[in-house]
Length: 159
Image (cartoon, rainbow, N blue to C red; front, side):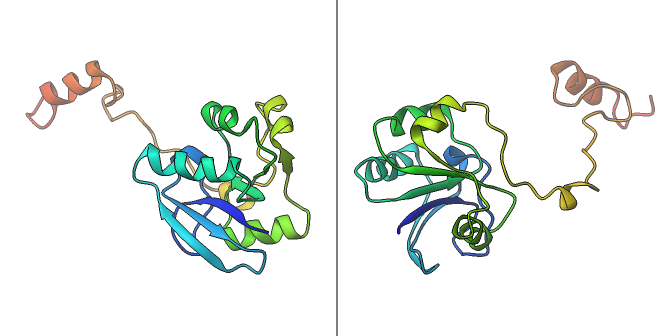
């Protein structure tokens, strides 16, 4: 069985990407957990070439946290299965699939379950994380044009 995994790195210990389209690397792994091929995602053409190979039937399973609209449209005609897993390493994700703990869907099920919740999330690790405040000490968001102007105007000049 050949599996295409969207990953953040090029090893088995790298994490599975949250979204297939935004992965830094794509790993082709066999059923014995050996990496057969790695492909760096540098342009959309890299992803489209792998998707054409998946539609042609070269891969049995695609693994990522989420699949976007364009990927789902691309996979609509194929018989490839899809696993929705993230917040774990590639090795752990393949073990979850092997032991049937992960959510494995056909592309038709993926299309009908558009907003499916990701099945496996390590809530223990995320429990103590706090969101970074987007507000500076002045109360304006530094992302907005008003906040940017405010920080430029009044930052560091004794106001």
